[in-house]
Image 1 (spheres, rainbow, N blue to C red):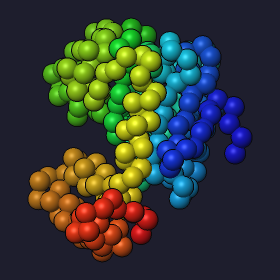
Image 2: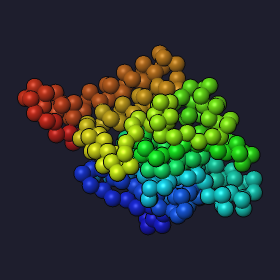
Image 3: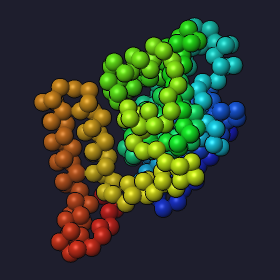
Image 4: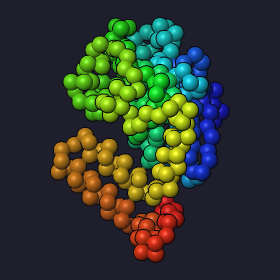
Length: 259
């Protein structure tokens, strides 16, 4: 597929997907559809073990939704867009490979929802975060009300959602919205280094790990432990498990094959 608003570079088993939609890398129907499509392609690509998502430039990761598109939608059109949005974020969240958000600027509304659907989030010192939807007379429609409370707790989530105010990168780090804050000029290299480290891990084990964490978070403890045990058994049956143990016994670096 040819992408109008995305660029993708693959190196050392790491795919870097850059959203390029000026101004602000804002999200519209086509951007969402392209994200869903490229995630599917990267999921099936045996030469990709980890993915970084970022925005073009230094001003915005994703500054939010394309208001011009929203202004022209009727109720049915909005329902269709909401489903497209949900599909895109769920694809990232449930992808069988780790996804890192490299947040280089504003992450507002849909941009923050996009970041929250990723496994890990690294932010520039200049990054800003907000759910400003309340100021437009609506609420987040791409999972923001649900994913944010799982990260920061319900009380803080309500504060962010109800007031719609902007927080800086340091505050986002304190609330565990982001895993790390770095200098702007170190952001890309840091995100790619994290991705390279993940790309060297056992792919099936990472897949099972993500499945156990994501699925277990939505069920009771006993059910979650069953999911973990099943995922563990799945990873134990792989050739990678044998290679990992052999490498440890031989005091060498493992060479995982994803099998």
